[in-house]
Image (cartoon, rainbow, N blue to C red; front, side):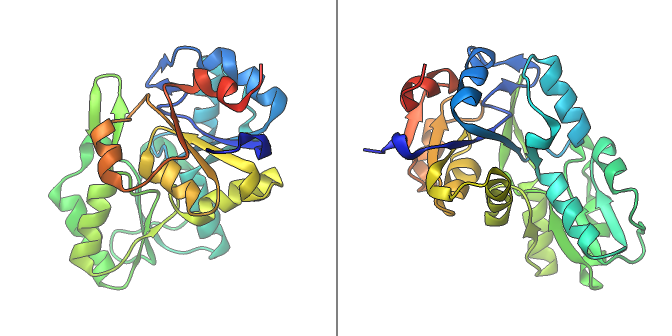
Length: 259
């Protein structure tokens, strides 16, 4: 049985834990102040359709008091990496809102140091994939905001960008560098900001692979919620075993023994 008395910090996934689309998950607003009273909290997301400012604005609009500096998003991890490289030439497959954060880098469809893949929604087509493939074949490296399989929307499941990343990896014979969950460095970045060791932190999410599995591989306690994209059959097939499963974030304070 998992000992939760050692937990001093929480890494909380956003989409599927606190909300789905614009629908707040029942009880999520009410438990957040309680969790923040007892734990160091950071908020982690692979969302690649919103800039950090937009994500923060959404949380505020939905009634969640979260500081911008407490949010760790996968696109920001890519941005920090590229900034460390200087001024590399990039080919960006990113949502327009996120793309604006990358405007400081030279961009080209003819030659690139990096092909950066995020979510471009309904715009995916063969021509876009083939252009990216040719840049990779000519020497560019492949950077992926994340490699999620699917995500939950208000109207049902949707295929995520992982399938497009995998297609480009296969065609170019190059492995993508993944920046969001479940990449270990993404979790370590948040842990460093919290100032806590992994054994003192639990990750809470609806994705058995990226949230729970990713967190467990760096030593976090993995708590799976049955909201958002949770599907029992997918969890069983994943091979990942969460430390515990709860119906929703509303049950988290009771699990941790706080009220």
